[in-house]
Image (tube, rainbow, N blue to C red; front, side, top):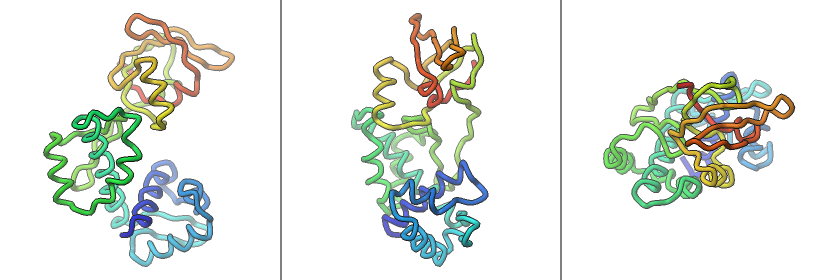
Length: 217
């Protein structure tokens, strides 16, 4: 696959996690930042390579071949993120764009060696699962902090928004994976939360809470 084809496959994969019955080409265009007509042309090419199934007005779905290819791209991306954070001391808000470039390296042998070198990590720095060499990945039960009831104690497992600005906000307030949080108040007006973490009360918006994945302890 070309770099462009790999990017399309990855975008379709991520969209399919939300809409498994079929992805609208307009949704793909929005993610790729391309014209709908260009997306349709690319989807047809991917269909010729048996990576997607596409029927006009019914959307796009990944074939088994396409699904495996997408998982391997995701695997490379997330392993490189782990490497950049753990071995090169990048911060978690710096690694996404770099991994976007590194994920296109073709060598399967290199990626398997990288996986072994890192100790076969199960999650990337943002808490997202890393597929193994066969495309299998752990499934962790989690929910958004905004959905958790009052007086519950939770542990932060991951982020929904991995943009640098959001991750920098979390760093500013010392919220990271593994942080233990207690919800002590929820405002009825705007659903903002007062949380207790490390003995300190912090007020966070509903938008922030809606981008943190947690599990109840």
